[in-house]
Length: 514
Ligand code: FAD
Ligand code: DLZ
Ligand code: SF4
Image (tube, helix red, strand yellow):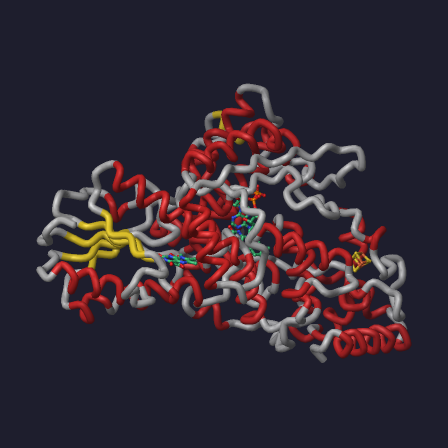
C-alpha cells in the first residue's frame, strides 16, 4: 500500500463503474477502499444470490482496478479484523497506514440511510469528506427537481417526454419517432402457447466466484433464496454479453409480451439487466442508445424499442428522482393504513395460489421476477390484503438482486401499494383474478377457480379485490379513476357484500394474517 497524504476513495458495492465520480482525478498516493461488511450484507436479509453476485462483482472490479495500477485495499467479509461496517473500515485504513490522509472521497450512495450516516463522517473522522453526485444516471437530480417544482402531480409520462426531447432518443427533430410518444397499448399481448422462449446465457464461474459462493453458503445459510445454480455475469464484459443477447434474441418481442406471464418462465423476453445497471456494470444511456440502434437498423420494431427505452429513460430515472426528492418522509406514509403482517408464503412459497407460488419460486431461484409478477402478483396481493408497507418493502429489498432502496421503495411504496396516496400512480394497481387469467396461464393449474367469485374454491384475488374497495372506501371513493368499480359496488346486494367480507375474513385467518 502507498504512503498516505493522498485521499481515500471509498467505492460501494453498487458503484462498480470505471466512470464513477469518486474515481475521477485519482492520483498517486490515493487509496481506493472497497469492503464487504456485515452491516451492508445484513441490514435486510438479502437473497443469497444477491450477496454472491455483488461480492463477486466487487472482487472482480477491485482486481481489475489493481491490474490497471490503482492502489486498492479490498477487505473481504471474513478477513481478520473486518470491523463489519463501512465507517469502521475507513477508520481501520487510517489507523493501519499510520499517517494522515487529506480527505475521503465518496460517490453519493443509493440509499438515504447511508447518505444520512455519511454526512456525519467528517466530524467523526476529523477528516474532510467529499460526497460527489452520482452522475451515472441520465437525469441529474437538480434537473429532476426543476421538473417537479410547482407540479401538483408528478406524472411519469410527462417527465419521460422531456427526457426524450433532451436526449434526442427516438426523436425525429421535435417529434417522437413514429408520431407517438408511447406504444403501451400495443404491449399487452398474452403469450401464445407455441411461443419459444430464448435460453439465457450462462456465464462460467471462475475461482473468485467459487470462493464467494463458499463464503455465502457458510455465512448466509439462513437467508432466503437458492445460491445454486449461479450463472449471472459478474463483470462489465459479462453484463455486456447479456445485453447483446437481449438486443438480438429478446428485444424484437419485448414490447408485445412485456406484460405477459407464464408458469415456470422466469425471464420471457425481459432484459434481465437491472442487476447490472444498478451496480454499475452497465450504463443506462449506453443501453438506451444500443436499443435505439436496433430500431434504426430495422432489427426491432418501434413498439418494442420505445417500450424498453421508456423503462430506463422514463421509469428508472423517474423513480430515482422521486426517491431523492421525497425522502426521508416518503417511506413513512401509509395512506391506506395497511397493517396486516406479511404472510409466511412470501418466504416459503407455500400457498395454493398458483400465480403467487410461481412468482415466489422464481424469486427464490433467481433473485429475480419480472415487472408484472412484482406488480400484479406479489404487489397486487399485498395491496389487496392490506399488508403493512414496511414489511412488504423489506421483502422486496431483500429478495431481488437488483434491489436498492432508491429504486425498490418508490416501486413498492408508490406503484404497488399506493402507500404514498397517489404521488406515483393515479389509482391503485388493484386487480382481480380476471386480469391475471388474461395475462397468464397460471389459472389453469390452480386449485382455485378464477371464474368463481365467492366460496372456498373461488380465486382469492376475486373477493379480496372487492374487499379492498370496501375497506378503503373512505380513502378511495373520491378517486375519479375508480368511479366505475365504486358504482358497481354500490349496485351490489347486501348479501353479496357480506359474502365478500366473510370470505376475506376466513381467508386472512387461514393464511394467519387476520
Ligand atoms: P426489463 O423489463 O427488461 O426492463 C428494462 C429495464 O428498465 C430494467 O432493467 C430496469 O432497469 C428498468 N425498469 C423497468 N421498470 C422499472 C421500474 N418500474 N422502475 C425502475 N426501473 C425500471 N427494479 C429494480 O431495478 N430494483 C428494484 O428493487 C425493483 N423493485 C420493484 C418492486 C416492485 C413492487 C415493482 C412493481 C417493481 C420493481 N422494480 C425494481 C422495477 C422492475 O420490476 C424491474 O426493474 C425489472 O423487473 C427488472 O427486470 P429486467 O431487467 O428484466 O427489466
Ligand atoms: C447490497 C450490498 C451488500 C449485500 N453488501 C455490500 C458490502 O458488503 N459492501 C458494500 O460496499 N456494499 C454492499 N452492498 C451495496 C450497498 O448496500 C449499497 O451501496 C447501499 O445500499 C447504497 O446504495
Ligand atoms: Fe392466481 Fe386466482 Fe388464477 Fe389461482 S385462480 S392462479 S389464485 S389468479
